Length: 282
Image 1 (cartoon, rainbow, N blue to C red):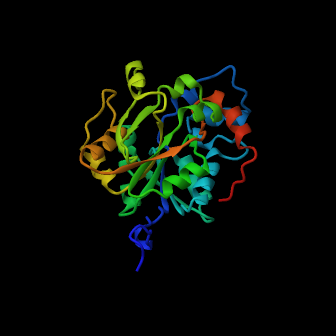
Image 2: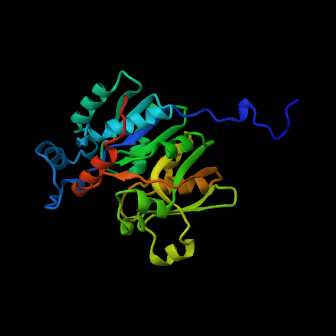
Image 3: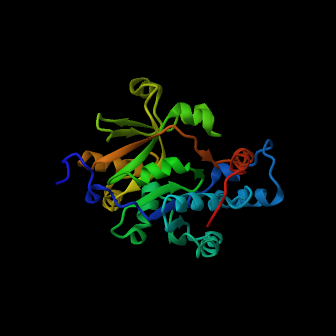
């Protein structure tokens, strides 16, 4: 008879094979001209369109995102896009057929991140899904740990490691959502755009969220039940907080790692340099 402390096959969570990438953003910062940014003509053209995930940094940025997802066992990816994003539909068709099958779901209006996640409900079905931003490249070790978590989870990034290993300025990292967890490593609360008082209360060791999530299907009902935030948007953080309030366990997966951010034209050169040695296999 197995020891009661042994892990049996039934105790091991089935790793997710589906991922949702939120690509509906308007790309306002990317559209803005930046005299300091050195872009070639094609990079500048894509930046002006706002579809930052397709900027060529050796190859389209999304290629790197899809490749690292495939590395951790994802085989199906859904890009949440706007109705006008024919270029992303075309990209999805081109990217499919290798290690990942890529499809799209339409978010009719830019009503916030929870609304974007809700657009992928049909794609997710009854399975757990990884949900990521389209303008971030998350390291394989963080995504692998996220995939191994039970139930719902998020990556809690170490702030010092983000400053040291990312292309993101420290002042921007201070504005990221702060994560509070209990003694068991479960999410207790998450605060977007924390003020100085909140930063002091949480302490320097509190991790931050960069929207690297693993969700059970419970997230979709939560997205349908929240109210718009003070910004007038349906925020995924509010849906997550609702789940926590109702007793849904959400694991905080610690990661002392960097994340590459492709928010503005000034980010392109640093991201291109950092990805230069990364092998892409689609």
